[in-house]
Length: 388
Image (tube, rainbow, N blue to C red; front, side, top):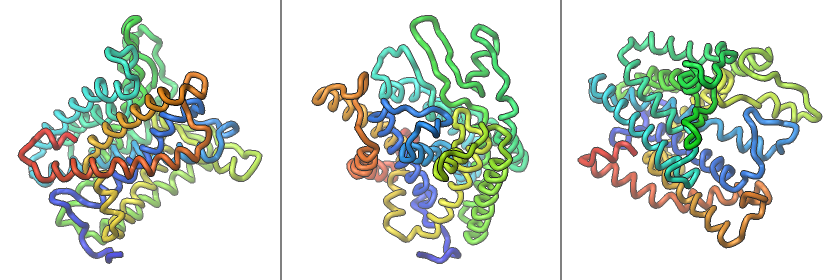
């Protein structure tokens, strides 16, 4: 382990600890997507039903809750470092705007096709890539605000959006479509031919990406690493303490937790939080853990396994698309060879298969992701590579 006083390892313009955290949550995402591919016969609700969800499935899904908040936070943080490096907010704003549009287009095409296998689609699920793209579009405008104002606005969006949970608009009303995109998860109908599902309502995610952007100066090349690690520790612990306090009060933004038939079931109920849209407690828990893990990765960055995680995090969009199509191919192959063994789905009989297949897939995907990351680092003259 290196001393906390040492500066972070930088891979060209990239920070290893940031890439490693991104890579870690992407492996959690891989586990969750293996579940969504081969365990569809055991769907989970949001929040989950702890009375009918077995502990292994519950905690596998809860672990995956880290993915979207951490990834969106790091997107904002990376945008801030980009702006700081170039000394030009206009360049950062333009890049965010173009990349945001690219991600929205990607969600509507390649990503959705990987999930549904339909072209043209009859259903489009507007999920995490969509919301990251829209969040980048929002940040391209918000980054012109003073940093303190942006941080306050971000915290207000994160902490206050649950006040809007009771606001709904019926299909056909003028505000139904924009509100479904902003906060009220639902369906947008385009006749009988096309339906859009706003799986990731936008409003709180703008707060998360803005918060990440506001943290950027902590990670600048001239920033003191010991001070940054103290701040990460304090903010992470404060977020977790806020989560525990609010959860004990059993009030704002979440269904109440209840005592179960066992201590384990009570613990599951306590940590059973809402992702769509992410409640204040969801964001407090996941970002609190994320900040503490980011600190730990910086302190352990001399270890080889941190560099391995950094490879996955260094080419995130390439990994994302690759793993979706590999999973789709494996699913179709399983159906062709073995048939449908869970009614309408092909699925594993036990969770153990998920925990076995996920690390095997990670090993399989590592070489092409590493090759692409090296190409990305070597060929900076190919501007399109930075979008992946």
